Length: 140
Image 1 (cartoon, rainbow, N blue to C red):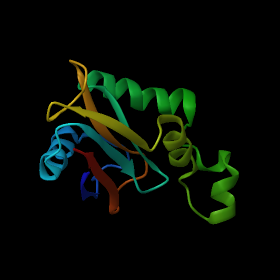
Image 2: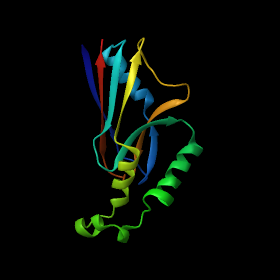
Image 3: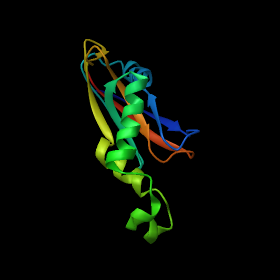
């Protein structure tokens, strides 16, 4: 079995941001030179996510609005985590828990085996500081 590991580092200008990382995941697959297998894509921070969805900026705005209005509003006094730690990012932790922190992308015939509109995204929910994502390609 062949393997290859890459790390992506993000330091977003905005506290919350969605970034298409599909091309970086494909570069990792190509570096591993695998034709059949998978690539694990995992955020290494508890206030960030990795997910697969449509590459459509209006959808990104819908996701951000959904997280803010329905899942975890950015309201620091609302959360016990913030009073116990002195931080203000409890909402980011809840958003990451909701979206998830990793995906496994299949590789078939030397290509990421995604649907026609699927792309891989990094979701930053508490940015403006360096954070990492690990890419681990495995296969034959």
